[in-house]
Image (cartoon, rainbow, N blue to C red):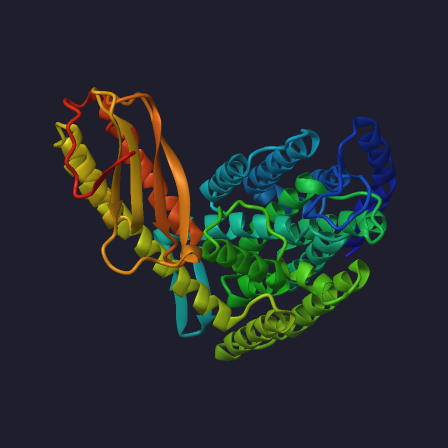
Length: 496
């Protein structure tokens, strides 16, 4: 117990001593997070707070390796796994630090690939979710599926912590609670190595929070959030590997429930909005609390309270067995979902409507592409200007154009206008979009513009897609290469 207390207090005081130095150094280095659309702070804040967290945790953890007691012996027994875990976490820290220092930062895909590579290394040394004992009569053996499951867990938690770093002290506070819960479970199940790792990280976070809580003097940045997320995720896997009990994974899920659900709902929003999964977002759980009128400090305290409540209720899983633990776990998850529903982060009707709209748009895009591909085959058989015009009229009809008009000057210098009009009632002006498409290098005369009138058909986005496909046909099949300029389309008007 003295070692546990020494590790916690040592990392705490070390973080308290290092953080002011890092704040001064960050200002000299100009490594600051400037106010922007996605931020809530009003002035530049140093953003390399991951440095004191990393140094404090690592110094105390490495020091324990040299102790000549039971805890030191436990570390040396699984030395390879500990070294790999800490080395992979250090790589995550370095990737995040580069992102924090660089003006433009690293691309999201690069950081994702780094996370995936580090998780693969951890899995390779045996830190995997292989068995989960749901009850005495039910044990899930994942076999080869333990690899993708562990990768998903580690990368998912790393990004969940990263996305939760949106308010002063938010990510650090949630991570501190997670470290405390995992440490308690590790001590309870006799896993001294994990207890030391989590207490060292808890101490560094406690010291860092003195400077990170609102009003923050420093942000942890990606160097801190990626290091925290990766270390907590990998450590929780080691705990689950040792105990094989459901509670080993269930407790971290409950404590990190808000960032986990927030990440899942963010991915769902981006999917429905047809945006990249790496696109920036300002609809996270903490943003919703701010939209309700809460101040930063109060929003963070609310999230702390919900996290502590979930953690406290989850602790009952440590003293229950069999199906009772699973019931407690599911009830707490439903409670967290209810919290998200109350603040407006998830709405079932809007989600269903969004899925229907996305399906309708996807189906419309597929139909437009199929029409375009059939028209491509038609245009490839075009030999004369007359055939080209007839193919163009058919393309306009299939792509729901209302009319097209092409002014020409023949080889006899006679001006004329080729027109095509959709059969049936003419659409109201408010339902159409008029534009001109330049016809380059035209053989039948000087360059001119094709005037088109496009039916809106529900959305301007559809107009843009159909016009783009129509223009692509014009680009791919230039009329300058056609033979002849005699045109006898369905409707031809001459200029007077």
